[in-house]
Length: 261
Ligand SMILES: [Zn+2]
Image (cartoon, rainbow, N blue to C red):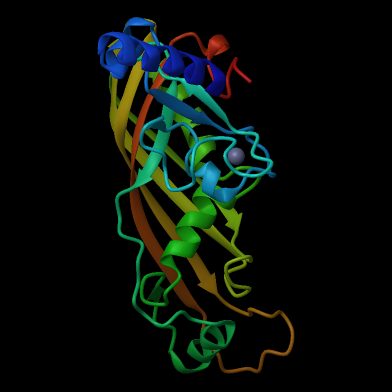
């Protein structure tokens, strides 16, 4: 795909030198867009920073912070030329600021609160874990992270419900032990609320997804806990905007669990 663009660009550049035809115009006339959709291999080997780019539209003239697909050593990602109304895309983008200036709790802090906190609930934001939990869930869970799986599920829901308002809810426990041992399993529930519009062979899907994390800290190490502690809830929430265009025909789509891949 890169080569197609490179060759077209070379031809356009020659046109520019010979006749002064703007490069962008030549590319457009040749049916080559400056834009592409980043597509990963969707397995556990994909870099997390590249998972964050999956399904997004980028421009060859304006690379993302990661560089273009295959710029990095051993990158197997693909740049699919983007043609509006024909090329599928789909991605979530955080709309909550995940930054926190609070001290990041260590396992020791979790334990201290168990004995001294009197059961008072804490939020991920106040314990400095919001970004790690939200990003682990979005890009690190399972083989590729929840954002890509959700894109499949929302696409299926859109095909099932058709044009108009769409809401889709979900929820499951996940292993957050990589963020902090004390998290272990937490539950993330959420709901997508948006709409589906007709775009010929495609469906356009736009909306916002709200995520809610919940966990109870109790008996964290299973052994060696002295009596006297009080279990306490850990909660957190964040939002992300979802934007996609997927084919109506699930069998020809990169997005969907039903019928597709
Ligand atoms: Zn890659």
